[in-house]
Length: 235
Ligand code: SAM
Image (cartoon, rainbow, N blue to C red; front, side, top):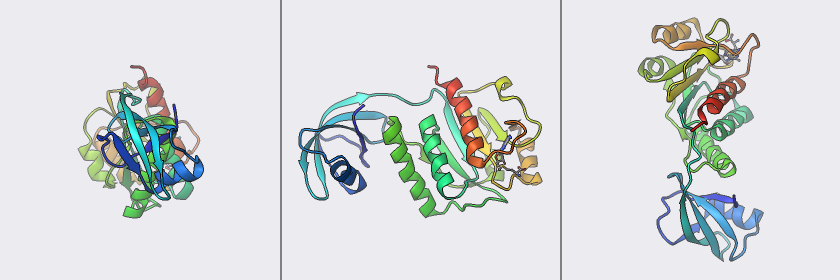
């Protein structure tokens, strides 16, 4: 796989221009020159073989030579609904979820949540999705959905396998059936409140446990997602 670059608009023309951070990466980091071959993707599912045609100070022109339909998505549609951790741990979570093939992250608003999913935070998350997609070869972008409060989210999510991660007694994940649609809910650093646990139970979510140790939000999220990804990546 050659170096990959994200184009923030559908690629339909035979010649396109990269600008902003993607052009900077190509010129300043990789010191691209005319004739170098790269791979472009626009999030639509395809990737494109392209050749550098002109290198400017702020922009790089590329000739698009070939469109390839290459599907590196998981066979299952996985949503990670998570009360976000702070700072670097948030970035780690988004990167790993992207690599593992999560289709959608829903930032959960919970009673004990520590990181507020404000617009700037969501924009940063979107950028991390792009960086991780460049690295791991995904041609569709993980969606950062609008933040949702736990109670309405829990009641409105009715389809497929719904895992509610909580310490204590839970169904062994190897014995739960995995549907084609999977939603995994992870609580905040301070844990779910009793009311939030009651909401999950009332709406029929399957409580799952990862053992007796207390995992960080991002560890629990990645452990459960990895389980689904390994089980689901069999097409
Ligand atoms: N003191 C908190 C509590 O008692 O819930 C710890 C919260 S933990 C740091 C953050 C979230 O990760 C939890 O709400 C849960 O969703 C998930 N989690 C952490 N460890 C887990 C485990 N062993 N089994 C299931 N879920 C876990």
